[in-house]
Each structure stands twice: as C-alpha cells, then as structure tokens.
Image (cartoon, rainbow, N blue to C red):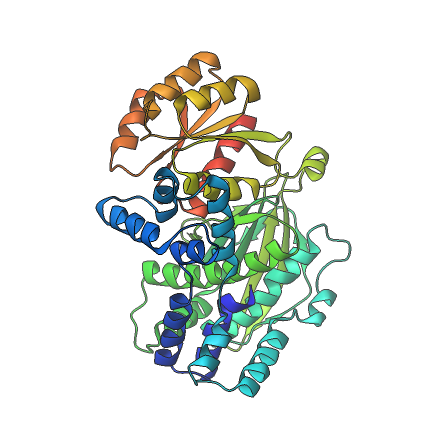
Length: 426
C-alpha cells in the first residue's frame, strides 16, 4: 500500500514539485511492458504476428490478448503467463524519481524511512481503546488515520480522549458525517461536529477565510474529510486480513435529527476529541456479528459463481475479483452460452455473471435458458452497450439481480456481488 500514498506525502512535504511528481508518474507508466513485447521476449509470438494483432486492434475495440488468442498466435495458457509477467513488471514511484534525477538514492531512503515512521500507528492509542474490544485493531487503524488526515487535510491537531460506550442516543452537535464499512465487518465511522469545528474544517479545506457557509458546502467538506479518513483506514484494515468496502459519506444536521437513536443490536463507541478551536466526537457504530458469521465471514455458506464471457481477459479479471471476496468462489468460467449451460448443470452455482454480448448465443437467451433450469439462481449481467442493460432488466425482472458495466470496475463488481448475496440471505 505504501507507494500509493508516497507521492502525496512527498508533495505535501515540499520534497518534490507537482511537475516533478507528474513527470515521474508518466515515466512510471511508460515503463509498463506491453503484452506484445512480453510475448516476443518469451518466444510466444514473432514481431510480425504482434504487428498483425496491433492492426486488427485498431479496427476493433478488443484487447490485444483476446485478439492474439482468437487469431491463433497465443494459447490461453501463454496469455495467462504473459499477463502475470506484465502484472509483476513495474517500477516504483521512488525509483522513477531517482531515475529522472529529482531525488538521490540517499534522499529517497531518508524520505521513505520518514514516511514509514509517520504511517506507523500511534502506540498511545491503545490506552484510550477499551480492552478486549472485538474490533480493537480496526478501531486503532481508524483513529490513527483520523489524527494524521486531520493534520494533513484540515490543518488541525486532533487530540482524542478515552473511548466510552453509548447505549441509547447520540446528541447531534450540529453535523454528523458517517461512512459505512461493509464486508467481513459491518460498522460506521462518524464525526459529530459543532458548528465552529465544521466551519473551520470547511474554511481550511477550501483555503478561503471569507467563504460563505451553507449546509451543502459544509456537508461536502466534512464528508470529504470523513471519506479520506475511511479510505486510508480501509487500506490498513485490508492489510490485517479483513475484506471491507466503504460507501459514500452521509450527513445528518441537528435541525433534521437532534438525537440519533441507537438500535438495540448496535454498539457505539465514542471518543471525545478536541482541536484548537473546539470539541468534537469521533465514533464507531457497529453490528456485532453472529457466532455463525464470525466463523464464516460475511456469508453463512460458500457462494459458488459461474462466469460467462467470450473474453479470456474479462474472465480472468472477474475471477481474480470474485475470488478476493471472503467465502465466494469461482467454480467455472465459460466462453459462450452452450458451454455455460453445460457447466451450470454440472456445477450448480449460486450466482451467474453473464456478458450480454457473446457469439453463438446472446446473453438474453442464455439467461432465459438458465432460469428454466433453476429459477432461484442469481443473475448478474455485464453490459457496455449504452442503455441495453436497462432494457434487459425490464424484460427479465424475475431473473436479473444486478448490473455491472464494462470496462469492469473492481469496486462496482464487489459491491454488486455482496449486495446480491446479502439480499439472498434476508
């Protein structure tokens, strides 16, 4: 995770200029080896064959690897090897900055050590988190990140007091901004701010002392702060073995809801906090998992997924995404409708992800055939063809559970699968 944020850190510290950072990022991207280049180096293709695929690629919207397989220049196994080589052939941002002469080796080592020290959790936080808390490590990651992001983004030094539990209500000081984490854990991180703290955060994020405050601007700025804290904390939580995803921030103003009721099955941990201009609250609200879910993750049983797409690249991309979700497993990948029907009969999957546009059998027809075999299976359709997915959804309301768009987005795909599974369990 470190390289992802290192550039931002260097820029904020003034160690590199924005132009130098952009040049280094461009250099980093330019060093990515193309699939054709790797295929030549491995002896899988000749330069002439690569050029033929490049010419065909200019005429179509297909991927190089997909075309190379279809044209008989690569096997599926060779393409997978090439993709893995490409994935692991990269240059780090720090290496690019040194290569371009923007940093020396000694400076890079010093800045990396400094960066890593700042990223380590603040040990004193252990003293303010209740002992034997089931999500203690995750809470520590969030609090540690909040302190650092308040300082970097809002230019405010956040001091936290000892956490305590609330059981009935949370009094809204002026604005509560929350971000929902879902996955192997289900909890909300929230900031509860009085007017002066909310306005100061807004002013500092805008960099304008004369800004006119309205609820929309204040909610956007505080929400962005909560979102950045959550996004950075999410990376740390993933590293300790949880699989979590975050939703966009939500805002509640005191005028709309003065007292937020705490439902019986929730636990709320509040940390009193101060910044130089006032008091605020940082909190976590979570649903303790049942004993069964503690043992199994977010699901009560492993969910089996069948992928149907004529593109080997899309099938591989989807397989990697799906298999990264706890207790979800790809049991088969089919390249067309007939193969999918045969696999469906043999594998009995819980979820089928179907591309709408395929040779031999259109996705709509495949969905109808699958529903005839088992009308309880959950169907997720993929489409990159404008509004056609909406049309299919209207036609097949009984069968289609979700839609994901092409090109494939990892977060969208994970969210769709988890939503389908959650709906299935309710």
